[in-house]
Every structure is written in structure tokens, then in C-alpha cells.
Image (cartoon, rainbow, N blue to C red; front, side, top):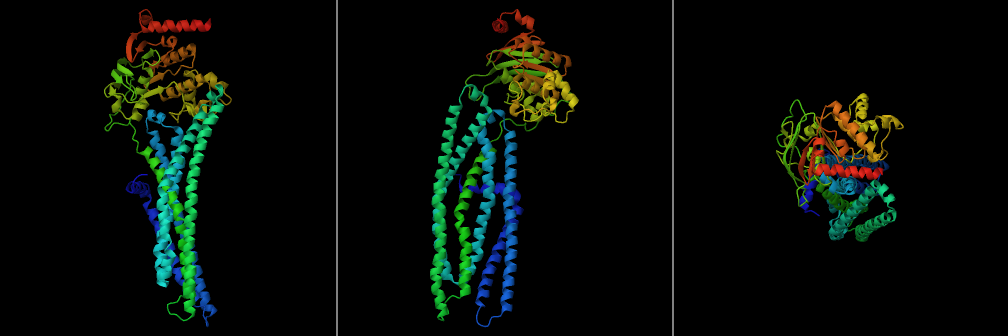
Length: 590
């Protein structure tokens, strides 16, 4: 775990926005404990009045005062708990929102490297632990300190010797908590890590359930889950063993203090009956016993409180590991204003890019220009760098400065929201949300009228499919669009991008699941609209042939550029790709 000073700074950072409410809760707790200390004195005085000659009137008056103060104490205690627990709940809500917003700001590459189950666990289980720490644990710790501050002086004033005897076993409790603290924190972190692994496997298997069934891997996945499940069980049992030793030990020590008070107090009571002025009255003994009893519960609870606090500290550390991670792709310090009338011109100049874990360049000096309204195809073998260009254009990964220009502006100098409002990127893996078809299509433009939605669905050649759906545009789409075919998902993603009406449309193999005839029809629709410049990245050369120009990539470079007919008669990669696809088509038909 982190040093105490670091832990304190983390706590202060989370509690600072709720300082007034926390202070009000602390004042209420102090009032509860002051009233409790006053009640001890009143109990002592009331019982000591039960001597020969007492009257029911005086006794009833004392009882009424005790009842009134006890009622006020109960009401203030409820208020203190609402205030302090409310702080924990508020921090939980704020922290979960902060974590979610922070994850939205991270670049896709980092999120793809993180395990989804791990992030889900941190945003749910760990945040819940932090709420318990800042609610229950803080309340218990503050209450324990105030209980000692208010009750102990009253007890010492009644009988210093018995008070110290009652507290004598308590240092042993603190020693036990200190000895068990670090092992419990270590075991708690291990348990949370195993829970994250379980969550990740469940999420991954549910997402890939079709592949599991196709390849008959249910038994292997069952065994993998069993191993992780056993690991979690063993970690939970190891933690439970430590707790089962600590908590009963703390309870026995606290009970020992009451036993000492009873044994030693009996002698002081006897001395008082024999006329010893140093003896203890019955009222004083009852007040001492009640005071010690009121200290037993918060002290016995101290072990559980410390455990809750340590669990919360581990969770806070895990959450802050995510929050401290700064996104690599951000808005520039001084962003350029967008050009008032976008044309959709794209200019790529000597673009180089190497992925962090790669030894070779994915792009090695790529240069090309797309004029406004032009439709250009980018083709090449698998792994030549086509998709890297698409991701760089949308700043899913960051290009070098002064290498990519949109309408004459370096995209690195534009705000991310401005850039992504001018470039509509359609990836090959079309993601659809659990919502209606219509809501998925207008995801980027939620206020779009249905008439517009229908228009762009028709441009993406999706209208006939929508008419065949059970509820048309109101048909619910399953998670990740599982209820639709691959081609329907891709055309839905294309219609969603068209609704954005961006000056530049980038299709990154976005029609890979669509047949050549449908793909050519979609491109023809885009050509007729001529509202956007289109970069059509594809391996479908028959569809690419209808574009104004074709750029051919090989090993991270543009090696050919020209119209389809021109390139087809030139010896080079494009001619080879065309012949290979023609041969594959003839084989599939033959």
C-alpha cells in the first residue's frame, strides 16, 4: 500500500468538495457524545438519590430529563449518520462519474489493451468499497475518538483507578490491529485482482459465445472459469481466516475490560458499604459500567473499521491508478478555429508512423491529396498500412505534426470535437448499441428527423432491410448489433456516418461484408450526392474501380496512383491484385 501521507492526500482530495457536510456530521457526532457523557452523570445522580427519604416526584423529574436527553441524542445520532453516510454516497456517485468520463477521454488503443472486466470491477466493486470507507469507516473512527474524549473524563472523575483498569486491555487491541493490518490489505488486493480476472473472463466469453460453440470449446472455457473461480475462492478464504482470528480476539479483549470492571468494582462497592469514603457508590458504579460499555462497542468495532478502511484504501489506489493515467491524444493548448466553409480537401504530406511495440514503420513517407468532392479508393494487400491511415485521420492514433491537413489546417492543431465533426470515419467493425435501429442511425445527430434518417438509410441501401424488420426503424438491435447480419451492421454504420454530413467521409473497409454489386451501388449513391470528399479504403477492387482515382499501397508507401483503367494496363501491384481477385472469383463460381 502507499505511504500514509499519500493515503491522506487521496482521502482529502475526495472529501474536500463535501467539507461542509462532513463538518456538520462531525458536529452532530460531537453533540451525540457530549449528551452521552452528560447522561452518565445524570444516571449516577439519579441512582444515588435512591436513598431513604427519596420522593417519587424528584425521581420522576430525573427520569423525565434522562428520557428527554436520550430522545434528543437518538435524533441527533440519526442526523449525524445521514450526513456522514451521505458524504460517502455522494463521493461514490461523483467518483463513478469521474471515472466514466475519464475513460471516455482515453484513446482507443489504451482501452483495447486494458481488460474490460478489470475496468468494470474498478468502476463498480472498488467504488463501492470507497463509499463504505468514507461513510461507515470514517463515521466509526470519528465516533470512537469522540466517545473516548467525552466519556473518559467523566469515568476518571468517578474513579480513576477503575477507569484505567477498564482500559488496560485496549493497547493489546491496537497491537493486534497493527499486526494484522498489512496481511489483510495484501490479501484484500489479491482477492480484488482475482475478481477482476473472473469479470474479464465472463465478459469475454459472453461476447464470444458464438465462437465458443462453433469450435466446441465449452469444456475448456468451463475449466478456465473453474480455475479462476477457485483462485478467487482461495483468496477470499485466506482473507476470511485472518478476519476470523482478528475480530473474535478484539471482542474477547473488549469483554475482558468489562470483566475487570466488575471484579474490581465489587470491592469498591463493598468498601463504600463499610463506610470507606474512598468507596464507590452504586450510582457511580453503574455510570462507570455504562461508560465502559459505551466504549466497548466502538473499540470492538475498531478491527472491522480498520479492515473496511484498508479495503477502501486498496480500492481507492486501484481507482486512482486509472484516474492518474493521462490520455495521450488531447486537444492542443491553443487550438485553431475551424475554417468557416469546409470543402473537404485532404492533404497528407510525408506521413511516417510506427506503432509503439513495432520495429518497422507502418507508414513510410505517405503523401497524397484528395480534392473537394473527389472519391478516391485506397487499396493494397493486408497489412500494408491502409487502416493505419484511417485511424490517423480520425486521431484514434496521433499523426506527427504538419503531416495531415484538412482544408489547409493541420489536424493536430484542431480540437478533437471539431476534427471529428468534419471527418466521418466508418470502421470495418461496425458497432451498434442496444437501442432501436433509428436511435443507432442518428447516434451522432440525436435530433435528426425521421425523414432524414430514412433518406440516408436509403443512400446506404438499408431501406429494404429496415422494411423487413419486425418493427421497422423501431426494431430493437441486440448488444453489438448481434441481431443483424454483418452487411446490415456495416450499412447501418455507414448511414449513421452519412447523417453526420461531414465534409470528409472515410470508409475503412466499411463494405467488406457487402457484395460487390451492393458496394458499387452505395458508391454510386455517394457520387450522386457529392456532398463529401470520400476516401474508400477497401480490398474490393471491383467497387474501387468506380472511384475517380485509385491509390495503391505496398509496405507502408503509395506505389501507384491513377484511374482504374490506366492502372489496370500498367505492370505493377494493382494489376496483380486485380488478376488475383478475378482468379479467386472464377474459382468461387466454378
